[in-house]
Image (cartoon, rainbow, N blue to C red; front, side, top):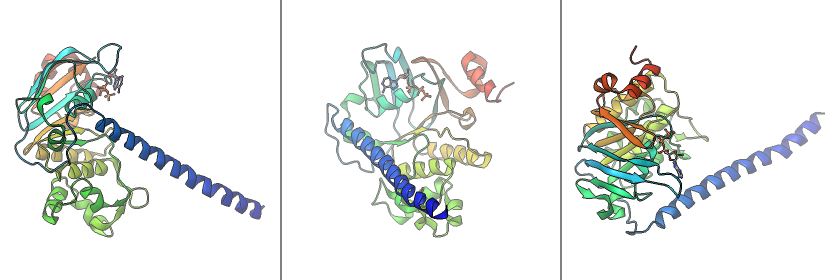
Length: 299
Ligand code: ATP
């Protein structure tokens, strides 16, 4: 029986590796397809992304409409809102409201059909695509950690960053605790072949990675994974600190991370229904009040 079980193990183990390999291949192909789609977009050629630094960007949506395909428009309500340079602006609203679509339009993965989107007072269509992408930082929801060391993960998009810049990004994203706990510090292997990072840590690694490119506008899709109280507090501190230096637009799934935002844009069914601070919206917008109540922020 033991010999049979051993035989079974030898049979199954390579299959597991094959499946893992196939999943990695599939993920790689999906990433390549996305790159190809971006390259195929009409308009300006994509220049080499470069660290731009510079002033925080202001953003303005003016009567913007958009549809993904031939069916009903997604952003239908002539979406208008304004984000002055710097500070923290949150997009909130139920699933399907159009929050991610706003990000996709800002990154020019899609072209809006009506109205105007401007960045720094300049029509987004007049921005060379390479310059636009270099000015934006994007932190995705539940960002993956790449196989490699923590340092490689951080320098992935900014290989020329200096050690000082790296340490500053680590400090700004409150990752220094993590680094001091890891056996080889920044040279520790992370990801599924190394130390597994929590959802909150992964998101802060992704923020640090984005900051090293010195974006003028940081688009942050907040992690949906459950964060413990400490990680949630850290994320809130990090977002506030980054927003002191650059413009931050965050899709917030937990209102607790953005109650201190300079402005909150409440979206519903492809339109903007209200804009204000947490206190203003709790008083003035029923949907926001409901969202806040379900998250125990108001009674
Ligand atoms: P969530 O919080 O669930 O991410 P959201 O507010 O970000 O939602 P969007 O992802 O912007 O909402 O989606 C808005 C609408 O557009 C939804 O009806 C969605 O099904 C549709 N949609 C999103 N992406 C595409 C796409 N690539 N092609 C077609 N329709 C899409």
